[in-house]
Image (tube, rainbow, N blue to C red; front, side):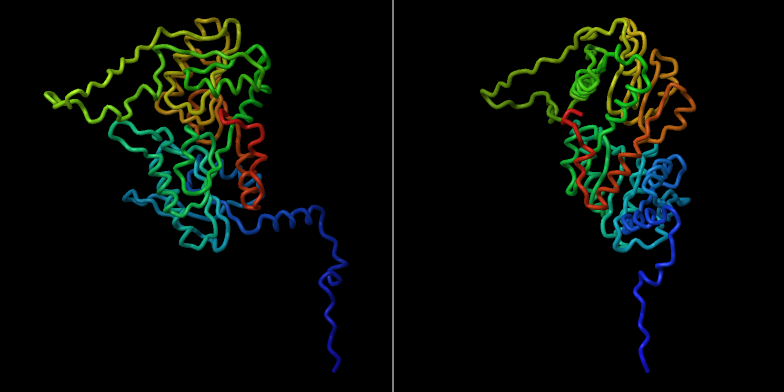
Length: 383
């Protein structure tokens, strides 16, 4: 009996014409196969950024459940197979930082035990980044958190504008520290009509490098606030006075160490001309806003007629919205690395810049094994 010839796959469907856009859709789905995006927090405010990222990727948010039991323990349940896939966990940090950290750790470990191939944490604002130096008899908590994330199963981290760039050295796996400055620079150029009459301001000498970078890119002047109103991290005790002095302590004969003179800050001054100009204060984090409010008052006294504050991470803790609303600050511009919808309702001066575009592109490039250099074009060490 003669055998039937099987027609080639192409000839069987040669009469079928795909709907418009289907070829592109299939190609995109093929390129996206093998990875999933999860949100490590189930609250609406925290999943907003995750939804924006997945919409840009044309993907669906992974199915999972994250909740707190009645006894306060965090429970995570993964509702789909992740075996052999690249998994991206998006975790924005709300006010309850410790719960957010546990959610991230537990989800990473759940994915690790579910045989995910790679687990990449997308943490736009990295928590505990201010605790990256030794203070008295404290600890470098940021280093501890880095070790915990590695132990939980993370193999890579995407973050944005670390408080100290040296934090990348705490990790035993790759860290991509993206920058929000291109988005904030674009906001200045598009949303401040007379920005050419502006001056970039550093509210302390510590922030001078960042301010200088903005000023050079916008071809604007630079001003630095210096004086007794500022309190920098370098002024805090760092443990080098330990152990404490003891009365009647025995001193080795002939050992006379020179005495370090105590610091005394000069009266507050503004180095640079801000009279009749727009003052744009730039920083990486806006948390307690007292220093920004004080800086705005000084700039007003020196003749600035509009004052903007721009930063990557808008933590806006405690009474920050009320203080901003009652201050001389005209506008506070932050990105959506941290949920702050409640603060925006309390203070209409707070504006948001969306950075989901660069995060989604970073996810795409990492999954496809493409170079990340494009995302760091013209980025310098001081940015």
